Image 1 (tube, rainbow, N blue to C red):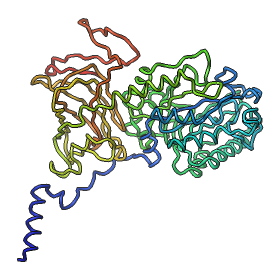
Image 2 (image 1 turned 135 degrees about the horizontal axis):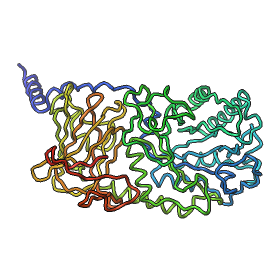
Image 3 (image 1 turned 90 degrees about the vertical axis):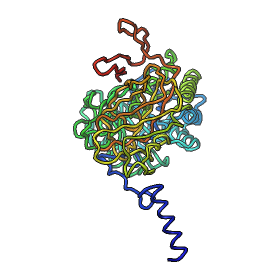
Image 4 (image 1 turned 30 degrees about the vertical axis):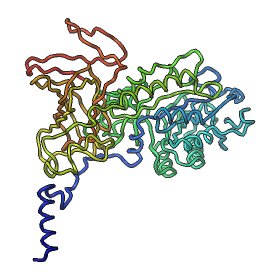
Length: 514
């Protein structure tokens, strides 16, 4: 045998001993569990937050729903700066800005050729202005996306009420918006109707047109087709929240609120939920209203992004055409406290092991250590055919924390039905939280505990569970209800009730029920 051949044989033997079969041939990934997101839906989910902009004649008439009869001359912002809107969004971590290009009053924030009720009829920019155009350029300069809301209900348009004529009008305006301003990442619409007119919206034709004109767009409505309304305007999803959904079970304008909040374990369509809420009591700016606090926004973030949804936060510009200083201050505080919380992951340098690994315990491709990497494209996968799944984290030293982040690689489908997390206290494992569904991101907030060792147990799943990320954090800003000797909460705030109790029948197991 030649010297070269001997060296190759010895090298191959060492590779097999050191890394196992994975050094020779990669283990194929598990099969996805349908439904799964499209490319556009994945990009939408990764953005996590969008900034909603309600702006128009209502801003100047102190109204929420305009009549459609306000004089276009009322639209006269003295200092409109779409660049400011885009900067506020980008600096706050919002992946896109969604503008009300036309609200129910029918006033268009672009010079539409199909109506005389638009910025072209106003004194702003001497009738040559285009809010949509200015915002389109501004968001691209900041590297974030553009979304547009075109209200189906139009209280100004004379042909509204004539189904054929108005649907043609609406699709004509949609075509203007989707062909003049480059890429549009989201089209946001609802089923708003009014004025007691008999009017049918041809949603299927609208959706087909939108997808024809914009390849990477997602369409939001009560029932999808790409993202669904969560069912309220409080910014909160259900504690159980599936992206799988059956579009055939709801129609635009007629939803089942609990179904929209929770999704469907057996859903055949991928239609994740979007949580809309305004920073102020109203959707348009009113001088008499004040914004929510930064900690209230953090609570909303936990209940939206932290429950597998996208948060779309409305921040309405004032009558000068600028986002108000007080709103900007709240957004800056909201951004700062999120950075403080998530800048220190106590699990970043943890040692992670698992009950099994796909392809064998030495297979780095699906190793449990993958859960320490940010993102969803690497993950821990267990061996096939298991009936229980556990992952152990050693944080290296005892640490105080009150927040856990868990993510699934949703490109492989949403899988986990139920799970719980234990910590080692002395020689006893105690459960600190139990939850249902994870999806893209789950943020679980509980009273402060101290531990070095944590265990994640997946109790049930649609298929082999996959974990993309596991993080451990401290939130010093939010107050969690504590429990006094009578078992009653001793503090109250806007957060949901999370009570730490002891279950003696289960081996002295402490449980925070989410």
